[in-house]
Image (cartoon, rainbow over all chains, first blue to last red; front, top):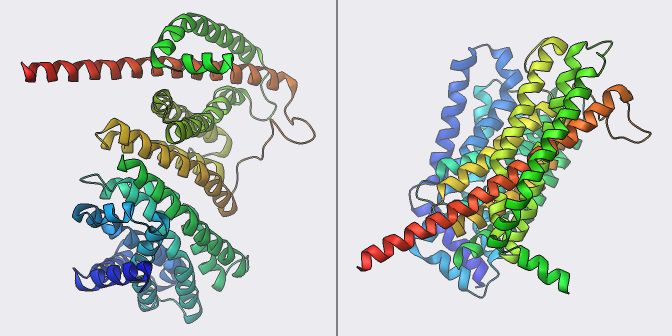
Length: 222
Length: 248
């Protein structure tokens, strides 16, 4: 087994066996969506209109939850130092870690979105649109979040700071995610345009995230 | 080769402090004169036929907007200096620029909202430019918060440098996406292909004020860098004193 797949398996096992972080993320997502009708009123037509935006906002906030543990637990038990000094390129190792994190926290959000769409009175086509945009967009949230996790790894209470640093950087993902979702039902622009830009953002963060995070971790080493 | 060596020599903190002490009075005087000239020109500038006297808010609004962006450029250059050359002055420059940039960005937002009240009928609209400047302001606050949270100065310098560069890559993307999202603000008019769209009677004072505010930024930045160097020396001296006391 190659070192990278071993690392992937290890992170997946840790995520499944310890704490159930994925389920807590989905639970948080559910609670945020449940709060929306209390805040804006149980008007079904209004919920249909703002539903995609609320799902995206909920997913964005839920994706923040586990980020502070993405590198911090490895930093505490010393395995991050092994990755830093090992022969495997640190960028690849971090990308694999972020991918494992996305599989265990991002994908459950994507799977939960259609169910939560029912609560917000979304029709099937816009539910599908939200699920597709989340599938394409949540990797960007995780990989940009990886930078924040690396920046705050050594801090004792980095969780809140991480959110403050990362949320402004996530604005483009939110804009194009919501734009594509609402374009699917009633929009002036076609679904394809914003979706492709969303893909571009995800691909870019796939490169930028691990590289920036690796630079940060190496700087902290000496 | 000799010029390069003297540049490196200049870049040591003690030489920098000595040189900036000599430079400071001249820079302050130059800034004051520039503001005097710019202020008189702005005072004498005619009212706009549509906007009336409120057009004069632009003489503050436009320069502060420019400096809000310029300060991030300075910070990014300094971040490269920190990460690539590990130069001690680079982090001093980055640290000193952040609060100044944040202040100019805030002034830009405030003057823009004061101008928007009579012109657009509201203090705030979720327009693309306003929103991206607001996000820039949030990023400045993030940089300052990040630096304050990390105790170790060297680690803080490098961490902030990485975030500054990530921000430098992301700010144009944020600006592009926000513009795609919604736009009401006027298009670029000072510098554009085919010459400026602004009448010389307004453009000249605007240029003077741009020069004056840029000089103000340089003065404030230099002063803040000096303060930061002295603060670091003081910290080192206190640490050495505490160390000596502990040994005794």
